[in-house]
Length: 141
Image 1 (cartoon, helix red, strand yellow):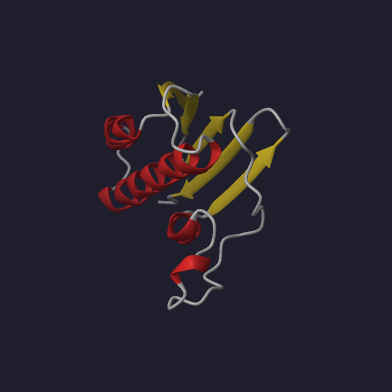
Image 2 (cartoon, helix red, strand yellow):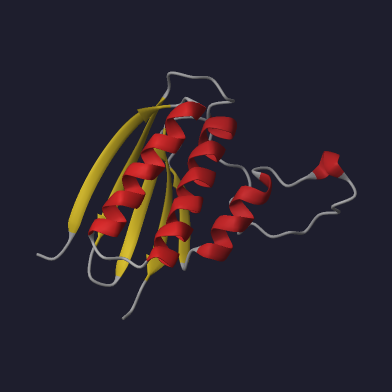
């Protein structure tokens, strides 16, 4: 088949986010995905992972996260899984807040908004044990 899958497991340490995003960027480039899309994916991986560590794991290190990267001829799909606190704001992130009122920034803040805007599809599913955040970017030639 023309699908490639790569599985990554990391601990919930902020300093591991950079290296794994670089790894994913390299894999996307390897599959001849154009630089603009690679950059968008890269930004979203960083935002999404930081978000999980900060919110699901309350910034506590040494918790498990996994990233499943699937690349086929028309899209990149990322499934980011964690076993922490599920997201409460399951709706789509929107900038429905007063920028002057810093205390009321949406949970997950700008990160989720950026992801919604750069990706083509996003899904968030939690069964109470595992939380999976799925990001999809299409690149129809």
